[in-house]
Length: 242
Image 1 (cartoon, one colour):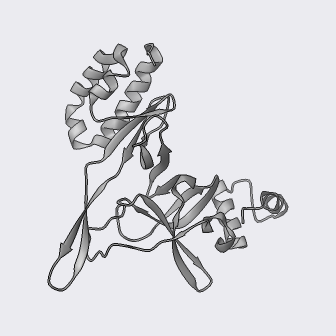
Image 2: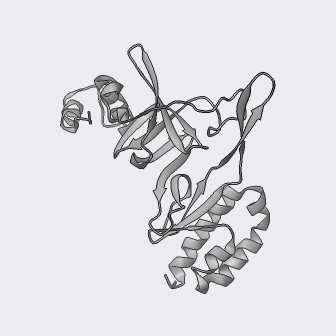
């Protein structure tokens, strides 16, 4: 059942409990507690069944194996203070729903997840019309301005067998970076990916990469965020062909 926004609005303006200082997050969290999580749109998902046996810290999830408190915009509606876990290997967002004496783990329908946040990291579900390989959850590196950069987390799987047990181990792989410009998405492996789309900015792009070569190796996320800011600055002053 979707939130009854008329009821929510009536409650907010008629109750002295809520002041003008209450944030949207607090209001929605309060409302979800009143109606019960089992009556929310979060139950539009599939019960999750783990297919891999993991016995050590080499797991398939983002950051840690446990659920973390986060937020999600699901089917256009925001939800806060939820136990979430991102399965990087299978590219699934999991939620631990507790209601009454029941406890269930659901995988949300990915294409209904507009965005989610875990431990200060924001992810968006992207699907590129111009490149069928660009699809799934991407961490937001910089989405200010026309030129935006996103990061695809990846993990490799290895099956381990010994005399007593078989299990899986997952290792972090090099991520994929992509950029968005004018509602299209493109791979961002190196500067040549930018040269092909921004030929008028070749000199500026080359200078930026040369000046930040060390940071591109030591802290690629910071480098990519700075690159997005630089590209937005250059695009605002130099005409582009696309």
